[in-house]
Amino acid sequence: MKLKEVKFFKSVSINDSKVFFDDKDEIVFVGRSNVWKSSLMNALLNKKDLVKTSSKPGKTRTANLFLLNNKYFFTDLPGYGFAKLWKQLKEDLDSLISWYVSERKSYIKKVVLIIDSKIWPQQTDIDMFNYINDLEIPVLIILSKVDRLSNNDVNKSIFHCEEVFFGQQVMAVSSMKKLGVDEIFKVLAESF
Image (cartoon, rainbow, N blue to C red; front, side, top):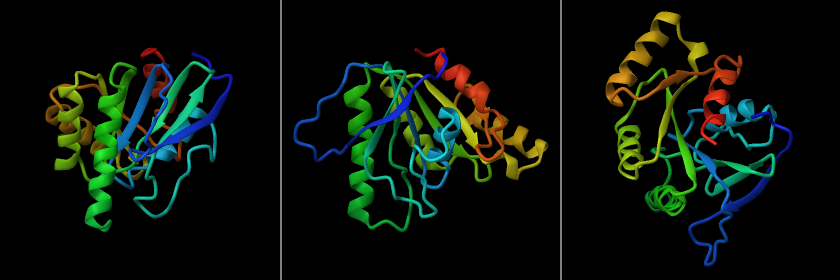
């Protein structure tokens, strides 16, 4: 798939009383706060600031849909697991993620689960993987921030994730240096 047009489509909150969902297929991006999810999406879409990034974790509080070629969505979900958010907000964001994924599961072609390569999978990542797996939605595991590791440490992180996530496909990326971006985009494009 060649990207001809990419634009912000809409934001969706669990509190929206009537949510109109388009019947377009989509790929959903999810991960702990501060795994550079938005930076990865910008790199994949070849846009610098389309998906809003922040130096402060926990800023994304809605599901944000981006329309590709007027055919598909890339959806940015809030980060999970940020300890400094107050309890009710954490619960609301977790509810939004689970609600959105279960509501859209027949249109979601793949969930991209982003893991920080420096800290390896946390229990919240494993819980998210299990939730998505229970819904029978294909998952692609992405290790972010690999430019901060040696090649040996990247390989260890990949191997560890393949063990933790039961042999799932694991890919490594550096959004900053564009390492692995084209390969990941190709895998995602094959999902449509």
